[in-house]
Length: 171
Image 1 (tube, rainbow, N blue to C red):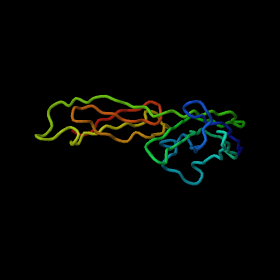
Image 2: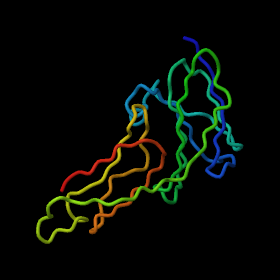
Image 3: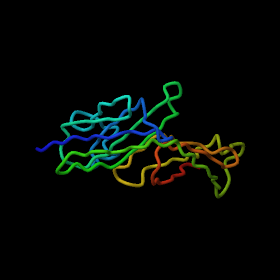
Image 4: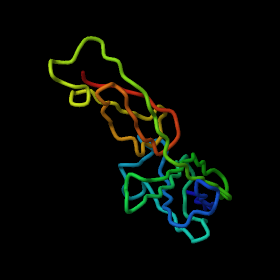
């Protein structure tokens, strides 16, 4: 089986070279891009340098998702993510650039048909808001299920840009 090398760089949200980051390459055909099911032969981490560059050799031909994850250790919910599809075919992949993005805040409001049980507020009920990846191979980061406030408004932080399905559960 032919193997190839992937080289690239990671840029911070402001365009400067990222310093502390992790790059992972996972097969794209697995649900969630292979993330969450990491095991031997599934996902691999890249060696990185202080100038924002990374490389990994011995990558078999195939369709992958490259993921860069930067987390603030003092506040684990404060993270920056970059993802990109990577197709390894007949040659090395050179100059792959992954730019981190700041989290996105999704806001909105929910209007319930009918009424909640007496004395129950929307924030205390069984209503939850959740996002799920819209595309196969898309990775889900940073969008934990949320609950609306009493007036039905909500705010969710999404770490990775992309297309999502929006679900409202309960009632």
